[in-house]
Amino acid sequence: MNDFLLDQRLRDFLNEDIGTGDVTSACFSNSPVRRGWFTARAPGIVAGIPFAQRIYALLGVQRWISLIDDGQAVVAGTRLAYVDGPGSILLQGERVALNLLQRLSGIATKTREMVDIVSAQGSTRITDTRKTTPGLRWFERYAVRAGGGFNHRWGLYDAVMLKDNHIKLAGGIGKAVAEVRKHIGHTVKIEVEVENFTQLQQALDAGVEIIMLDNMTPSQVAEAVKIVAGRAVTEASGSVDISNVAAYGATGVDYISIGALTHSAAALDIGFDLDQPKGSGEAFA
Image (cartoon, rainbow, N blue to C red; front, side, top):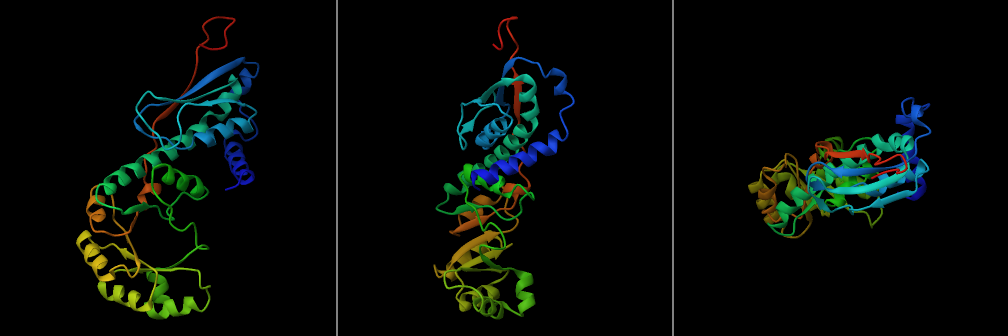
C-alpha cells in the first residue's frame, strides 16, 4: 500500500470514530502539551507502531518517539512509544491507534507462536489466508509478516486457486485445470485444493504447481508429501491450531496456511496513559 492509500485508509478510521467532532475532548481544547505513553500490558510481539504514529501525524501531532520496532518481542510493562501534543488531540487519536496496535500485535503474537513451533521441525513456512477482516486485510497481513509468517494470495485477482466448488463447477480437477489454462498467461501458477489421494493424483496428472492438502490429518499429509515427491509445492490447510501445528510441521509439507492467524487472534493488551503534570509550570513528568 502506498503512502497516499495508507493515509486515506487511516483517515477513514479516524472519521469513523471522530465523526462530526469529539464532544468529550472538545471540552479540553485549550489543554497544554502533554505526553502520552503506549505500554504493553501483556507479553507479545508488537506490530502497528508506524500506523499509530501516522494516525497522530494526520491529526497534526508530529512529536512521536518509537521505543520498540515492529516484530520485536516485549514483556508486560514495556513502553512501546510516546507522543507529545495537545492533550485533547492525543485523546482523539487514542482509540484508533490502540485498536490497530492491539489487533495487529495480537496477530503478530499468534503468528510468532506458530512460526516458532514449526521452525523446530524443519523448513515449513506458516502463511495466512483470505480469512481477514473486510477493510483490514493489508494491515492484518502486515502483522503476519511482523510475526515471522508469510502471505498467501492477496485476493481473487493475483493467483489461481481451484477449490472444491470450482472443481464441482467444471466437472473434475482435470477439466478445471484445462479450462483455466485457456485463460491465463504462462507465468501464472495454478493451485488446486484436494481432499483425498485420488484427487491428489489427478492434480499431479494435471501438472499443477501447488497442491493444497485440505483437512487431511498429519499422517495423511506426510503420505501426500511422499507421493508428490517434489513435483509440486505442498500446502496443508484446515483445522490447524496450536495443538497440532507441530505435527503438521513434522510432515515435511512446504506451507501450512492458517486462517486463525487473522480471524481468531486475541488482541494484545496495550494501554495509553497521559503523564501527570508535576507542577503548574511542567507539561509532563
